[in-house]
Image (tube, rainbow, N blue to C red; front, side):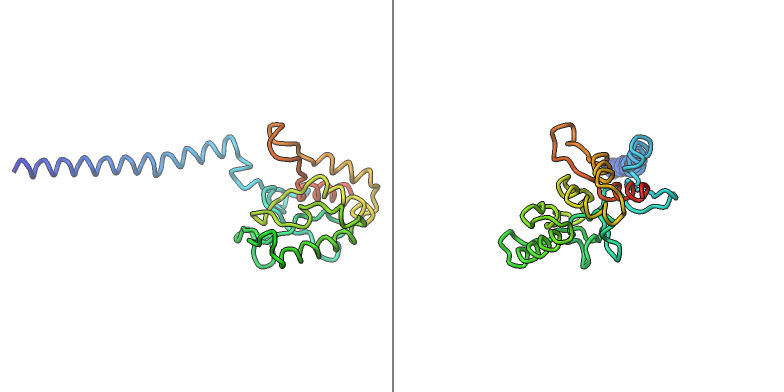
Length: 200
């Protein structure tokens, strides 16, 4: 009888602890994290969305996208993307998974280098690596200042702007190394293109 009572008591304690843990860890903790995110890191917690001058969401500063079409020469171009079948698919983030000696990768890099050199009017040897290779995620929103500088003349001519004006926009949207020493300087393509649209 005592053993049965002890078992019931132990089961009751276990059930109460389970309910307490469910409330604290399954409800309280997620709500606390959500509250801190919304209060302290509101933009980041909501996807770092970017809006145009009319307030419409045009993308995220954390996710790369393509700027192609009939007037593609009017825009700064992102890195190539291997995410998804057509690239830039946020639901299929990945790299090409091709090794540095893979003939398919080497061929695509050479084709991209030749096409970009022709489009931007620069020697093929000067085309930066990030202009012809996809990032590991396939969704890198940033390009190197060197790749942005390569595109200045083409974009300025297509928009009827001075190269100095376009170069100044690139400079304004160049982010320095994180904490002054981590990573490399980068240019966010979406934010630069939005600034470009406002200035035209």
